[in-house]
Image 1 (cartoon, one colour):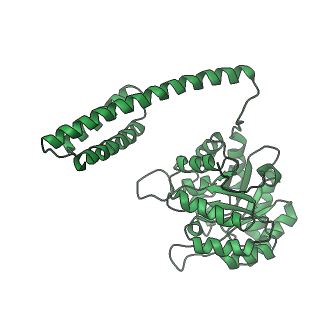
Image 2: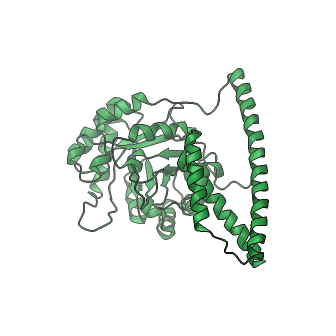
Image 3: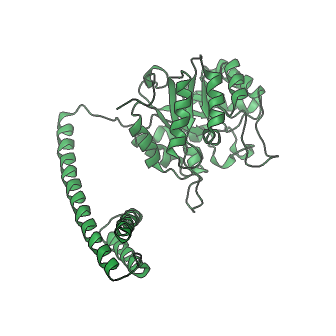
Length: 362
């Protein structure tokens, strides 16, 4: 299988002593005092934390705070000189990239609003070409894996091999506890396609509040992500952007202290043997599942033929609603996740409709 990206091993440029990478700092650079006060407090937790701040802020509507501009890059460097922490900021276009490079910012990231625009990403890639930049690419606002992958490919084709992804969740019109729903399966699929791609999780933008940041942070590490980007402000209540999702440095320290860091593998022979045994059991069950699905689809085909012979419509709403309600009730009684079973049966039903349509039109 062809490698999609040419990457420098993450331990050579991002990982620190096999501990998760932590990127933290204010959503926006607002003043020299704010930057220095927040930076020093974060450095007191761990000088290996990478200090972040937004310099240019893409806003949905005009007249909102759109960032302090280039002077904020000088403040980032002042924090670096004072604390020794590496620095990171978002770049949304070619001029941002040029300014960030000129000021020696250590890590650049491309935001969700930029990832959706291949023209903007290509312009940034052209500026970065020939440099030894470290770049992280956030997922696009909507769950489009190809856009995310395409942005990574454009930066990589510019010769940037110190490259990673940031999972910051996806916009939705549904009512959920999150500002941007995690949709972990999207990040997992990207990692499956590119196993050596470092993945950083952004709990702040997923949550939109501070309440769920510890939960999302732990889940990200449990899914073998390489680090976290958590927004922190010395006084979030006066922040000029995203005040509700920023933690204080003291709160950040508590969150980090409670994280459990697990390894992807174990050298324990007994564990490996037992895990292999359990996985083999899973393999057998999966074989049985496929066989059951095959038999079910055979019955669906017969139903489709019978409906065609009797001039009956494919979709029968009452029957479908009764079946779904029954299976959700049964799932709850069996201790299964009702939402999972619901989504599973929706997929099964869609494929049944597809099969019967083929027969009707055959």
